[in-house]
Length: 363
Image 1 (cartoon, rainbow, N blue to C red):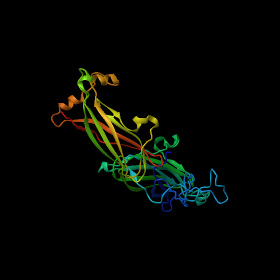
Image 2 (cartoon, rainbow, N blue to C red):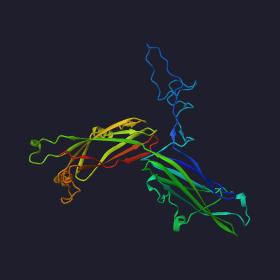
Image 3 (cartoon, rainbow, N blue to C red):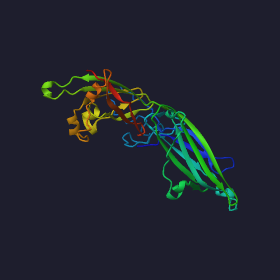
Image 4 (cartoon, one colour):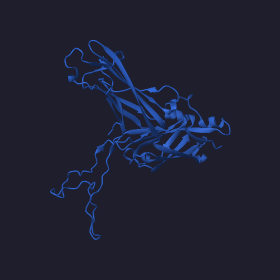
């Protein structure tokens, strides 16, 4: 299940105006309410305990037989809940929120008199200021869903009848830690048959983006294959790349994929859960503070092996070891980056990539 990551409610109420101009500061992540057992089973030690239901919060009522397969849920059973407090935004996730501009006028406000107000050309724009931008201008965000063709043409906004709402959705991939500022601008025209004016208001929302995973890596050198097995071919260089993935967020996550995106001239072998059982492998679940260890074997490919694998012409093949040796005593071999994908409790996806990983060349 994919759920919106966050929800911002925006209600517009300018002074004596028709469109709400209050961007709500309510921002939250959906979560599940915990279950609480209400009657722990107490059995004599010489008896076999009865099979427990999926949760002790689900118990048949007094009038229901004990074999009821679908009892009425207890009051504390899990429900989808929007907490009153803002949770946390994490690097690798997608920040999503809904912005609403509401025309709070009713048909009775103006009646059928010629001076009845009309709200036209309502537009919502959003910008995101991230730590990496520094003093630069904020990044303009593309809002969805697309407006109808007649409203989206030539940059025109939407006309709102009394009680109508314009909704736009913000979607932004979080890639940096630190302070983020979401700036929302609403503009509209307020007109009657005799006059008209344009109104604009702007609201800011500030939140902190925290790290979701701590990645620690370690590289070791593996012995080269023996010359008897290699024949006359030069021995291949091989390394073992280990990584510890620590869940430093406040939410439980399930790892979906951990892969190496190798640099040209290199290949890798996966030694983790996907290599053992393939698509049916049980994916690791990381609770807050838990650590998962992953391992890969990285090897340098000869030019002939690169051409044989396809996708590389003979003149495009590279010898990473030879290039590193030509770089001097402190030369390094760059393996590539580590890509990590996961799902949160509500099914939302997250993904992040490390910086370039590598090691010094041992001569």
